[in-house]
Image (tube, rainbow, N blue to C red; front, side, top):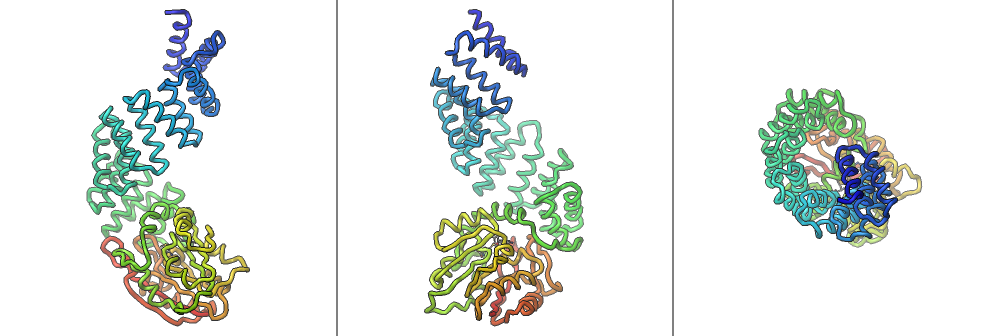
Amino acid sequence: MTPSDDLLNQALAHHAAGRLADAEAIYRRLLQDDPNQAVPMHMLGVVAHQAGNNDLAVDLIGQALVLQPDYANAHYNLGNALKDLGRPHEAVAAYQQSLAQNPSSADGHFNLANVLADLGELDQAVACFAAAIALQPDYGAAHFNMGNALKGLGRMEDAVAAYKSALAIPPASAEVHHNLGLALHQLGRMDQAIASYRAALAIQPEFTAAHYNLGKVLMSEDRSIEAIASFEHVLKRATGDDRTGAELALAHLGVMDPPATTPASFIKSYYQSRVQDWSNADWDKDAESYQGYEILSKILNFEGDRTDLAILDAGCGTGTLATLLRPYARHLEGVDLSPDMVEKARKKDLYDTLIEDDLEHYLSDGQRRFDRVVAAAVLVHFSRLDQIFAKFHRVLNPDGTLALTLFVDDDCEKFSVNVAGFFSHNPAYAIQAATDAGLTLIAQERGVHEVHGTTDIIGVGLLFQK
Ligand SMILES: C[S@@+](CC[C@H](N)C(=O)[O-])C[C@H]1O[C@@H](n2cnc3c(N)ncnc32)[C@H](O)[C@@H]1O
């Protein structure tokens, strides 16, 4: 062993023991003696990465790779630094280079899979997790993350199997039990989902997402008292979306007043998780679970020969209605709060203008005018309707019309919260609010708007004229 080999071994021992400063000092000394050494250069880059200095890490590891292009571990660590710098495509390339040199690295396959999953390349991610697991069958995190990717692909049975494999490898994880609960819930295996959430809470009693999701299953099973207890746990600790969800649920269960508005962040994350379902929808297809467009098409009064209308698709979502509206429009504009939904709508290339904004804020701009406003299944996120109707009135040209759909609750005074956390309205209240805003009802149509689980959600289409 040469003196420099001995020094390098000392540095590696310091590094492995977490004594980064000692390791760094020796790597630097070695490089002072001879700057063309790939190993200390790479390891100095690893120290920089561990210290959170990823730009420096990329630079140093890049220099090591110039010295030794087939250095598998350096490609791997370059991938880690690039990932942490938010450069996922370059990280993928680095991990792939690393695996080309060292295909038997379970960590290499695992880290590549994680970046692919972040990039939404879920099929490829699943293949890489499987490769990691083939090399290291007891790789618990790989089983868990594979379950998440499979869940993202809608392959719930496979996700359940992956989560169960993860749970077979100690230590037991609350997060795995929780995500298993989510997959089982989606599969409609309610008792098993409840057991999984409870197992998560046994490990981590303050796991608010587990309390929240447990509450949701219990509520859907009509076990109201237990559901209320779960949602009250959430209120004790959670902020943000889980808190909003719990407030909506407790309002549905009659324990709280409905919140005045649904916060934008809640709507954005809800539609981020649902965007794929919506982008597969088509307004004239008889989707089994969603029939809202049928109600709408019965009340729409678009004259056959007009092609000169200025039309607003309010809460346009993924733009499902655009194919219906486009032939009548001189100008077709869409507005929606959810960036994920707007992005899908943009891909349809049917709107003249698409705006990502809160509807009330958007309508407050005094310049906009339309002949037709369509608001399909968007006021289900609004409790009171007086302000929004006044704003619709303001943007309508004389004789212009507003067509909308709502969920119906004939038993409430004005509005209530349904089991899915949407607002239902008493149509009499909605009609009165629109009338007060200066709009006249000219048509209405009731029907099943959609089916949630086995429950029919009754909706109403209302057509008003200015
Ligand atoms: C149930 S989807 C309906 C989408 C579309 N109208 C359709 O029928 O296919 C409701 C849409 O309303 C949007 N939304 C909810 N609250 C909103 C708000 N305050 N401002 C703008 N858009 C909103 C959501 O982001 C979502 O895309």
